[in-house]
Image (cartoon, rainbow, N blue to C red; front, side):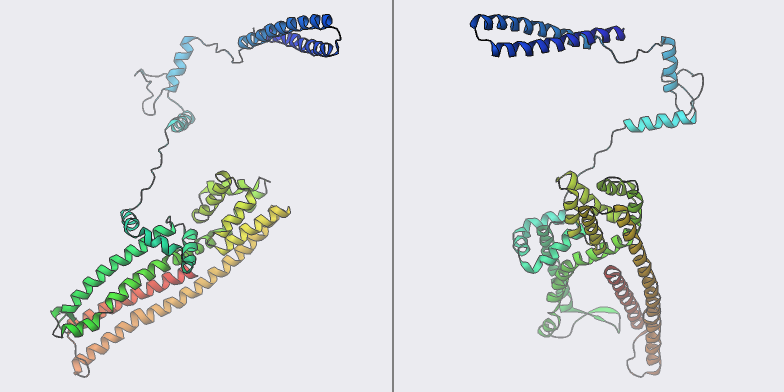
Length: 432
């Protein structure tokens, strides 16, 4: 049936082509006609051709409606029922939807196929938009105007750049408001600690809290520093924290970049468009830290409409890792100059992998040194101090402390030394 319809449609289209040629010829004849009688005859002929052309167009549309490209399903109702029973079989008992027993159970391949079909039809749960935290709301409510003025100061330019590079999900204004709010809370805590030590003191001799016997004025002068040091320390930590976070993120990216560059070198062998290389790296999910930077790069291309070279340079400018900046800038230069991407990725991956091995060797030697320092300072030194205090207590020479006081001193000293050592290791890890 479709063959006859196609032949009829071809004949109708041929008529349309001839009608168009006749219309074109008549229009030319009308322009060249000199006498009015001749022009009138040509116009009448044109009207006839227009009406004929409209009829031909309608015939073409009717012919297109008659054509059906779908292949008819020649299946008996009984066959269709059997097919439905096969489709609706369940894993356990091989029962159909109506509860009847099927003639056979599904094979493993059929079950896996049905699983994929069912999974594809499941609705993807939409990601909830993360709401701002309560402390951020309070900070913006009371300190937004002040933080807005501080952001405009040139002395805080480094902090603003660190915030952009660390992906902390805070705008500079909100982070400054949060820093001021934290400083205000620490001032309240410092005042409470100041009042406590103004009237009480900790005694190492009896290991209990006792009332102070000194004058209030003298205690005030001795403890006034608490009201200054704790708030300043809190604000200083909030000021330094983005820089520490940036250094930590830089180390994580530097750890991933040699292997991701090897991966990109392998992908570039297939001569793909350069931006697709980053999409493939993101799809693997093996490089979570460097993947965030590549996500920014892809968003600048797809959302902001930047070209690849501009996106590479912009992402490199705000990257926390110097190695990643060099990689992206080098790639932008290679694309601009028409260089070989495969050779670029190959050479850069070899260089980065060699540097990675050197850094691992340095870290191993540093870990051995820190282990010796920990054994000497945190384990051996407190034991020697405890022996000295016990000998002075027994002999009566020097300071004779009670056993409970010696125990308290040892517990506090070991705890503080461990905390200081862990802080040092964290700072060393972030800066290395």
